[in-house]
Image: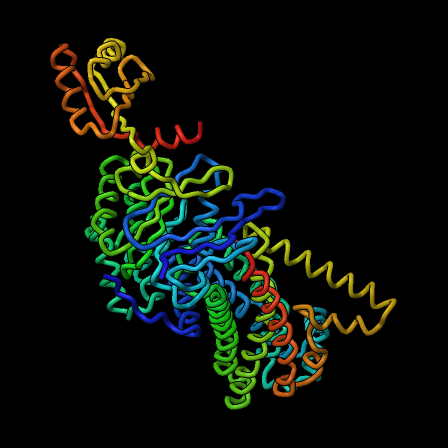
Length: 302
Length: 278
């Protein structure tokens, strides 16, 4: 049974085609990133998956069931972007209500609300109302509600937007822990963050959604190293690189960064490169094998 | 590990939404003030309108005011009301029921939709259960307000011993039921109007204007095709003429019309709601 299956799915707003006809099948497993520029159709796709908006054509099945099926309830959790909690009731009352809608008894619902709030480190703020919490804490409450009942699929739309680095890290840690049992689909602008969390990537641009293949799989016999130097010595390093046997080419985007391509069969290229840098007395800040996700997407686009 | 529970039945979900709505409404200062204002205002109506008018009529003074009241309360001659107090209460509530119900139902879903809160609930329950739960909650508030108004008048009647207990109690219960049913179409109307508006005030204006236009349009069209005039009865607020011509207990069959009005407006609202993006 697939986690998610879209057949000829599309969405129009008047004349504007926000999502072009899409066929997609995803299986359960590691977190999945949904990436794309502003206005690309991420939130539209997300809203379709959550049944917030109606598709113009096509069909979506989640965990083998149509999205409006009763049997989906409780198996799909979501964090909608910009949704706000009610100001009149405290957070545990609101989350208990959500748990009750998922079929928990009154006592079990309160326990479940307390569990998920404790998970996001809000165990001591249970009786606070949303307006008494900071933006980051409210975001954590919203994240917590998506985890009620440990749904099999959790859709998160910009889970760390507007959140400080500590809270963002906490959310990432929870996703990492929970992803052993649950599959997350995370929509975000923050590619660096998604790269840390997600092994699978969906890329959407101008309403066209496609699965992104990582460069490691697609470049065949060519490997890449990204080198970041402590000072403006990229040109100097580039001049020395021909001394390394497996070296193919290098390009520099700024005086401190180099992208070095070499034969993939040469497993010790990185060690030889480090030795070369030491020999020349060049200090480096970071050496990374493979392209970052951002660079891969940029490279694909061009 | 997924801790999947069987989701509640549709009806159970409706009741959960209704009870949550009541809980949060009565947790808010705005609604507590609304309730308090209603009780205070009704207390003033009881003291300075119902009681004062009753005394004037009872004293039988031939002054202009009592004549005016009697004229306005022609129903007293036709209705077999057990007391003047209940008759005047009926007259006042029938007059102010529509604006009261429209006001309390003005924000049925609007704020929650604008704050995207509906998304939390829609992920866990059927869309229709959300709105039906809301309607149930509003109906419960309507029943409470009508109950407070009618039974406080009944208490006044019994305190002044101006009517028999049995007859007054019977009339009060029938009055409550009638007024409750007369208020229901306005709840459905506000639900429908709220689906297309982004604020409670706009929703109120939209409902008022919609009712006026629909009334005028039907009246105009009935000049060309007279049976169309009957459609006027489908508009919320159109009473059966029976209501003004018979005693309280005889009016009971007239609840059919507001129930029909409620049903069709509600069905129309649900049809739009099912297709609306949230």
